[in-house]
Length: 301
Length: 306
Image (cartoon, rainbow over all chains, first blue to last red; front, side, top):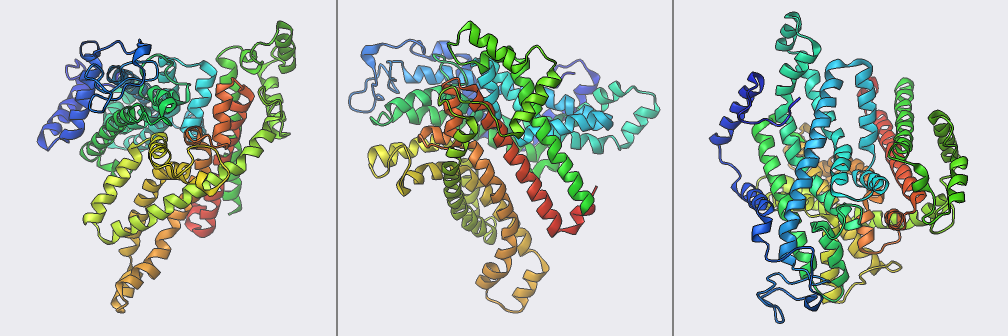
């Protein structure tokens, strides 16, 4: 079951809504600011090796706690200063964008695919399948996401890919809930009944008739979820159960920055935080716009 | 009503079972639980003793039954680091967490309710726009970063407030603000939409037709009813605050339940981590149950809904 719609998809079923979606994009003013922020961050993440002036994981101890260039004591050699072991802050921020992008997008995908599939199964099949999936969903939703993620991280240990799996495992429930609700109303619609009469198998109906119709909702949820996932990743890294050091994750940089906080080395705390806020803000704004654009039903969410 | 209560109680119990089952299974499926449950640096003999004690050779069902039995008895195991029963530790930290949560709630309501009312009274006005930006920022700025900025400003530069620890009123202010910040945005948005709904209702129109001054209509008639959903959310959020405070408590070294969870991770003290998550999740299940039941008492329609 493919959930990410590729424009050149050969599948007849998926191509119609995708074309429609792209058409909808052109008609009205795109939210340029969030798109520009996200595209810039994506480019920075992709081209990190070319842009970053230094190796983000290697520092020079002689260069510890250098302030940004425009402050007395700073130099243009380290535009945004250096951290407690002399690593270049700018380079770490640039490579941190890659970590956030990769973790954010893959985690949202894992959660989205899992939640959408289970939501469709639960909504369409009903009965005990529905009962089991929804009871698990309710229980997992009751756990505070961050606490649950910390618990899982404490079991499996810190690594970038473990974080992706953990975030996926924590956040799929939100998709499942919403998608199930959509499916419940979709399955009463005439085109689904016709498909049943025409002798389509349950599998075919779910894949070809239900899935394309919940994709819009899934995409909106994914965009809104991106911000949440990035904040959670930062929090986990900050607590030391996320991306392991010396990898340059923004949350990890904040944790390192705390070491110089009382001495007034503000740049170690301010810059990574600004990056997180920019990315989350852009994702939230884009998500809000998409919600209005693609899925009027979700407006009150 | 009896059937409704019975069903909701059943759901809550089922949730609690699933919760404990989830935690139980995750610990066992992801590898050898003795690795997690034995103290770091334990000897071979210790590991074997624990294995026998946990009954890992027995079936999962028997193991789970033992696990639940211990929890029901209030036995969450013993902390490796503090060498005291985990439950005792947890209860000793809970008052601090509650204090922080209440203070954070006060902040969030003090900011959220007035700004929400203002936004609703002047819809699409200047204040409404500012409120939208504020609530967007509230959702986008991680609470721990807000906390770090507060320390930077009020402790490092101004030197007004202590950066960590607890004991005086001054210690509570910054963590409470950092924690309340996110919730203030949520409370503002709910106050706004709830207020808008009430302002459109018949009795408010009547109050206006009677010629009451606008301040009285909003302050006395609309405000009280608009507050009900907000206070319900606040009640749920209070419990949530105890459980999501882990990052803020870590930033400010606040000795609450969240900090206990953090220490549990840092010291590889698995019984503490497990108990904190389990108790936190149970608290939320119970609160959801209470809210459901209260709503059913208030609104009879809910009782008969299937």
